[in-house]
Image (cartoon, rainbow, N blue to C red; front, side, top):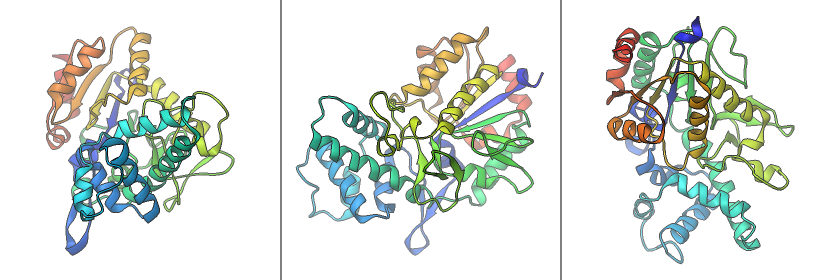
Length: 338
């Protein structure tokens, strides 16, 4: 059966970065798509709204660097560099907790909501700067030709659309739970996408020029846990749309039926406990564990972390995305069977 042969390919931020996604900047230079170490420098540089940029920067300096106010005597690039060590998931987790915690003062709750909205609103503006290019097309088309089969599924945790825009025109694809995927490569995006827009009735549709993209923020508090769910509170959470919840449900169903889970550029960040809980549930409900493949420059540490946290006896490791996509599916299977 196809299900016994199904592979699920999980794309993290390292997948777009490893494939060569860049944005064009002044004087024809190129800036790589952000990862953890470069996120705030890139994010604040590409923010469109000046007030939102100022709110985000002020918040980061106050709560994560201990400054009463941003050091305005420093030029903007130098200020951004001081924010580089701040963990992205920790920022979103802090805000989501302050927004919902009963002990939060009304002033801090209002401030946290403003910063949260600024972050969620600017994600689309920032990641829309990174488009498919010659290198990303080569990498992801090799992945398509050498690995992907019609019954496989791609799960992208990325807001950007670099992967899907890098696929050849001949390859039909669709967003599972958002558009029709019959006869196409199914792409599940549990964290949303910069080309999704949310209507007032809670329906998501594809909109390449979405003013405010549909995103699920990188925090373990992905759902609105208590109290009334207003549009203001639901933005950035699973509760913003039934379709987002269905994406997560469908991902879990696919994981239960798959032979192998291939993690490309996904490092299992500590703050993303929500996905880890999904994986733990999947492993508990299966008679046998799926095969695991990790494609990441830090594959040794990630595989050790996985085996310490989950009941996994074997993890196959690749350290380079180009090396992996140039290998054949049969080569990967032979390693899994070895």
